[in-house]
Image (tube, rainbow, N blue to C red; front, side, top):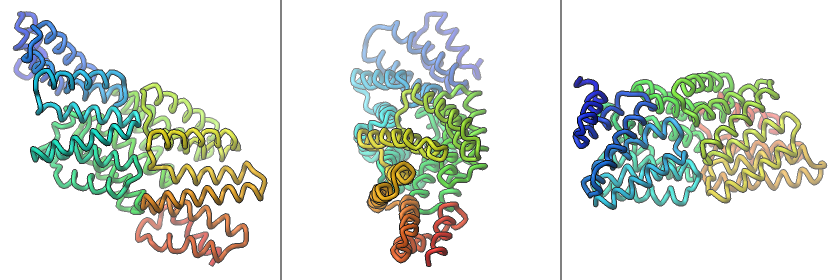
Length: 446
């Protein structure tokens, strides 16, 4: 019975020994699937609420609520209303109990909740509070989670260099053997999350080979720690990185793995991401009608989880697919929604890409003279954003599009002067589609 805490919890509950039962309901969470974990923790919370309303009761309920956040996040996604309810209640309990030690995971959960809802100003403020708390007590586990929160906020806001610094500090402190239990408190393994988003950051900063290696390391770590939600996260992020590199077949393989895992585990948010990515791979390989339909359905499913973050990315990807399929005006309408989302949320990591795709579609939608003038303005805006963000990835893509337009206008010298220094900055990734395109264009206009 010692290895079955849920049995002890049940027996103590039946015997009316609530205070002895409650820790076992919490402990049972660590050895079960998410649905069972939620059931056990909820039973513990219900049992707590039968006790007199005292500070001691608040101290008993608090760890149950904070632990409940993890499986809820895994099953329903960070932005689910239930997650917000849990962490709001936990914060109230911290105040009632005068508990400062437990406030950290509560603030972290709230930060994650607002992050996935793309309320980045609130999320960034909470991340700063987390880092202040962690630095005050100099606890490595807290510092790891705080650096992730800060890195994620900077990344989503398009401040890639600052984000990179925090992810690298996280990984300096992280030890899989020592910190594996954090996945049960925060919903995912911080090493997997840190490596995964650092890989994205390296892509945008212009280090595609390093990004690929980091993404593979994130997946390897996820397999090692054997935490399904962490593996799902690693698969999703790695898949989108392959999408950015236009490695279609490899992205499709990861999408299929993610769909299988998310279906088996009941991960609604991850399932939506997997199906969206799979739809993109189908459409990119020529199955446009089927792929676009799958992408649309998955985007709707993602909205149903209350997730708002990454909406500009998803809309821009769908726009590109629609443009390739001849639905240019609909694509431009979606891009306008993406730009509105960027402005309202401050989620700017793909802002340059939105401007570039707008330029591409504008060339198809307008007459030659007006289209070229408007497209050039879009490409210049993309370059301006890329320069500000120090994103060589977006700079290369925008410069290639603008140089191609200038080539068509007979301005080959200007095209070469624009694109050559951007291309020559790169020291790796020459087998990627974007660098191959840039090199081919430079050879045409030299």
